Amino acid sequence: MRITIRSTISALAVGTVLAGTATRTAAQQRDRLVGVDTLESGRIVVSNPDSPQTGPQGAPTLVEVLRIGSVDGTCDTFGHVTSLAVDSDGRIYVADQQANEIRVFSPDGECVRTFGRSGEGPGEFGWLAGIAWQPPGHLWAFDAMRHRFTVFDSQGTVLATHPLQLGRTGLLPRRLWVDTGGHLHFWFPGFNNIVKYATGPGLDSLARVSEPTIPQDPRMRYTREMGTGDNRFAMEFVIPYAPRVQWTVNSAGNIWQASTSAFAIHETTYAGDTLRTVQLEREPPRLEGHERDSIAAAAGIPARRLPAHRYALESIRSGPDGWVWVATERGPTRAWEVFDERGYYLGRVESPVPIEKQPAPFFGVGSVTGVTLGELDVPYVVQLRIVRGG
Image (cartoon, rainbow, N blue to C red):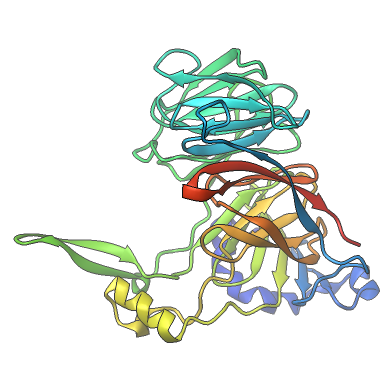
């Protein structure tokens, strides 16, 4: 049975029914706490109870080991950080859109060099919107205003420039991913596609798939009149907490995706096959009381139109080791629900500092690199070491 990205999401509600036709694997016989089923289609379904599957040392922990930032106007003074990357030698690359500049820091946090600036020429940017490191030595940068990729080496030398044909949303920042095979993945603005490219500084497209979405339900939209005086117009909005899709590209070059309404994430390929489903037996928190009334009042709709629950999850990220990090709260992330490469739930991993969701944190080998805000909302780049439990 082949399941496309779009139909996978619409089939989330029946996932547990399909599991009833599955064949039990040897892994489940060894561990009765986690259910591991193989469906007739070959898809593996990992069902986790809402309790960590860890040894006596407990769940992983995060420890802050590096903080980069200042307010004195030097290399480590950041304006608007749009993207982060870390190379195989541990150097940290910071894309600062306000300066249209890429800052490079050593693993110890010392400023090594800067390159890029505002302009139209090679290696210059109109809107530096995203970067990604591609081994063995290519840094990809996306200019959302000039609609092009620029490929640098680690010293900041321009290796290639690739113009792009983008749609109307080309000015919006978009993330880039590089899998462990060295393939670049890009969310193509305007056309709602994800594109996979070959390795190296060229731009050879290998595969393309539609962005995961949920079919629009008219009941989840409402119209509100806006404007002042005689200048009135109607605008359409999505009802707060209407189900949507969160997704990311993982280290294998596949796509993790999930509906926000249920704690079940699905690994799908560019060909549309669903390889694996990882579930956590946890109901999403209810949306009720004063919170429900205040959200409805702010939207200008009756409270009865709101969904019964808040989101089960808010974002999905993946590391090179195959671990999956799921944030469940709005705003800065203070903890992730973490699953190992098998899809086993390791527990809730607290962050020592709140990590901004934008720019997306970078999950590397044994570390998490992200942005936290200090006093007066001054941005700092922090690196957290992952200390594995038992």
